[in-house]
Image (tube, rainbow, N blue to C red; front, side):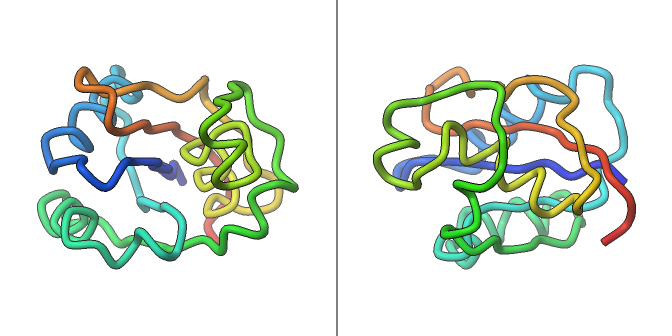
Length: 123
Protein backbone atom coordinates (compact mmCIF):
# COMPACT_ATOMS: atom_id res chain seq x y z
CA UNK A 1 0.00 0.00 0.00
CA UNK A 2 1.18 3.52 -0.79
CA UNK A 3 0.61 6.26 1.79
CA UNK A 4 0.79 9.98 1.05
CA UNK A 5 2.07 11.93 4.04
CA UNK A 6 1.46 15.67 4.26
CA UNK A 7 2.89 18.63 6.05
CA UNK A 8 1.23 21.99 5.58
CA UNK A 9 0.91 25.50 6.92
CA UNK A 10 -2.31 26.86 8.36
CA UNK A 11 -2.84 28.96 5.25
CA UNK A 12 -2.62 25.98 2.87
CA UNK A 13 -5.60 25.47 0.60
CA UNK A 14 -7.04 22.34 -0.94
CA UNK A 15 -5.21 23.33 -4.12
CA UNK A 16 -1.92 23.49 -2.15
CA UNK A 17 -2.40 19.92 -0.92
CA UNK A 18 -3.49 18.62 -4.32
CA UNK A 19 -0.51 20.27 -5.99
CA UNK A 20 1.92 18.79 -3.47
CA UNK A 21 0.39 15.35 -4.05
CA UNK A 22 0.64 15.76 -7.83
CA UNK A 23 4.30 16.77 -7.51
CA UNK A 24 5.06 13.75 -5.28
CA UNK A 25 3.06 11.25 -7.32
CA UNK A 26 4.04 11.99 -10.90
CA UNK A 27 3.64 8.31 -11.79
CA UNK A 28 -0.01 8.34 -10.75
CA UNK A 29 0.38 5.39 -8.37
CA UNK A 30 -2.80 4.52 -6.47
CA UNK A 31 -2.80 6.01 -2.98
CA UNK A 32 -4.41 3.90 -0.26
CA UNK A 33 -4.21 6.32 2.67
CA UNK A 34 -3.34 9.93 3.42
CA UNK A 35 -1.70 10.98 6.67
CA UNK A 36 -0.57 14.02 8.63
CA UNK A 37 0.02 14.94 12.26
CA UNK A 38 -3.00 14.40 14.49
CA UNK A 39 -3.63 18.07 15.22
CA UNK A 40 -3.86 18.81 11.48
CA UNK A 41 -5.81 15.71 10.47
CA UNK A 42 -9.04 17.29 11.68
CA UNK A 43 -8.62 20.56 9.82
CA UNK A 44 -11.25 21.38 7.24
CA UNK A 45 -8.72 21.50 4.41
CA UNK A 46 -7.37 18.01 5.18
CA UNK A 47 -10.88 16.62 5.61
CA UNK A 48 -11.80 18.12 2.22
CA UNK A 49 -8.76 16.46 0.66
CA UNK A 50 -9.80 13.05 1.99
CA UNK A 51 -13.35 13.52 0.72
CA UNK A 52 -12.29 14.74 -2.71
CA UNK A 53 -9.83 11.88 -3.17
CA UNK A 54 -12.18 9.38 -1.49
CA UNK A 55 -9.24 8.04 0.50
CA UNK A 56 -9.17 7.36 4.24
CA UNK A 57 -7.01 9.58 6.42
CA UNK A 58 -4.90 8.90 9.48
CA UNK A 59 -3.54 11.24 12.12
CA UNK A 60 -0.05 10.49 13.44
CA UNK A 61 1.00 11.53 16.93
CA UNK A 62 3.69 14.18 16.62
CA UNK A 63 5.94 12.78 19.34
CA UNK A 64 6.62 9.65 17.25
CA UNK A 65 7.97 11.59 14.25
CA UNK A 66 11.45 12.17 15.65
CA UNK A 67 12.11 8.42 15.59
CA UNK A 68 11.68 8.11 11.82
CA UNK A 69 14.49 8.77 9.33
CA UNK A 70 13.76 11.37 6.67
CA UNK A 71 15.49 12.15 3.40
CA UNK A 72 15.08 15.91 3.65
CA UNK A 73 15.71 18.18 6.60
CA UNK A 74 13.66 21.35 7.00
CA UNK A 75 14.75 23.64 9.82
CA UNK A 76 11.11 24.71 10.28
CA UNK A 77 9.93 21.09 10.60
CA UNK A 78 12.78 20.33 12.96
CA UNK A 79 11.94 23.30 15.17
CA UNK A 80 8.16 22.75 15.21
CA UNK A 81 7.83 18.96 15.03
CA UNK A 82 11.28 17.56 15.87
CA UNK A 83 11.61 15.89 12.46
CA UNK A 84 13.37 16.74 9.23
CA UNK A 85 10.13 16.38 7.24
CA UNK A 86 6.57 16.06 8.51
CA UNK A 87 5.42 14.71 5.15
CA UNK A 88 8.09 12.01 5.01
CA UNK A 89 7.77 11.00 8.67
CA UNK A 90 3.96 10.78 8.63
CA UNK A 91 4.02 8.76 5.40
CA UNK A 92 6.47 6.30 6.95
CA UNK A 93 4.55 6.06 10.23
CA UNK A 94 1.22 5.42 8.52
CA UNK A 95 2.69 2.88 6.07
CA UNK A 96 3.93 0.64 8.87
CA UNK A 97 7.12 -0.70 10.40
CA UNK A 98 8.73 -2.01 7.20
CA UNK A 99 7.84 0.99 5.04
CA UNK A 100 10.24 2.89 2.83
CA UNK A 101 10.02 6.30 1.19
CA UNK A 102 9.54 6.38 -2.57
CA UNK A 103 11.48 9.63 -2.74
CA UNK A 104 11.97 12.94 -0.96
CA UNK A 105 9.03 15.19 -0.14
CA UNK A 106 7.61 17.40 -2.86
CA UNK A 107 6.70 21.02 -2.21
CA UNK A 108 3.56 22.64 -3.59
CA UNK A 109 3.98 25.50 -6.05
CA UNK A 110 2.78 27.99 -3.43
CA UNK A 111 5.21 26.48 -0.86
CA UNK A 112 2.42 25.96 1.68
CA UNK A 113 2.27 22.15 1.59
CA UNK A 114 4.57 19.17 1.25
CA UNK A 115 3.81 15.58 0.35
CA UNK A 116 5.86 12.39 0.45
CA UNK A 117 4.98 8.84 -0.53
CA UNK A 118 5.88 5.73 1.42
CA UNK A 119 5.20 2.12 0.57
CA UNK A 120 4.59 -0.57 3.12
CA UNK A 121 2.42 -3.47 4.00
CA UNK A 122 -1.21 -2.83 4.86
CA UNK A 123 -1.44 -1.40 8.39
